[in-house]
Length: 433
Image: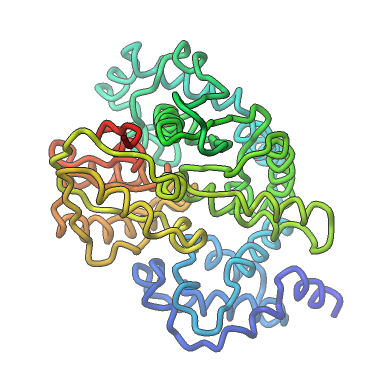
């Protein structure tokens, strides 16, 4: 009985009863659509969690349904009983992680990746610089000519093709940690750079700072910030995710700012849930709540400051692929569209189902590649119906996934995928006169 009771506690058993098994979640769930299994739907996963907690199924039975979940949270937007699916999913992942037996080699690898690599700005910088060298030295061209990338593990060779051109180490070093507008500051903001965004999409980050500056904001990049912890939480390493949260809260408390700005839907979703990681009434919970109140997506801040106009016409037909975590967790939907509407010459062509997940979901497209590609194929069929010249998104994982989708469809010559920030910069923004 003690084992069952322990599982009931760790799996948040009490919250499973909020699900009445009505099935409203089924049409919203990407994995249910592509896998067509009840166990790969939200209500099926919740029922499996309940069965494991009651001792009617094993943790081994739970592993595949939970690991195949994208965590897109689309189910939470249609649930009539407000099931806290995110809490149940995270609890299940943590429980599975804590009950796994791993080899010493696997444990050391994970300790390095999650404990040292992703949280370290220096490691992220080394990754960006190494990628730059790979691209400019001719190694990338040679590797593709000789088809060496096909030997990369976990299908990483596919993603290598869509990584954008990287800035030189000199360009990275020239970054300013504090940037002021030309005139009087109308706001003071801190920018959350992220780990993947800063290493792979450094120029998008620089464009984000410039958009904020042009909008009249003083922008600060806290040096002690670290990974948001999303990758850790998605992998069941909740304690490590909590440590990242504490580091970021401390780093951003050092400056009195109006907003903590991010440009990655997944990071933003994790940042606004920091308060969930600490017990109510504790000092850390209070600090996390204060932190959360300041977190905003770049699109929200630009719309609120309302100080940009665009001087260049962008005669382009685009479709918008919303980030699931930005729409379903942060509940930020209209600001990106409002910004795009202000770009002269731009035509927005809607997909039939723009809110359907692209299949990226953190590292899901790496560890569950085939399943991710099935979901991406559904998304790209919708994209092709819209026939855009560009797909606009607001999250690094989504951006790489959509770039890969374009290549898989053989559309690289007449379609591109871009971050909203880079699209705005293409329209040559300037302070409103």
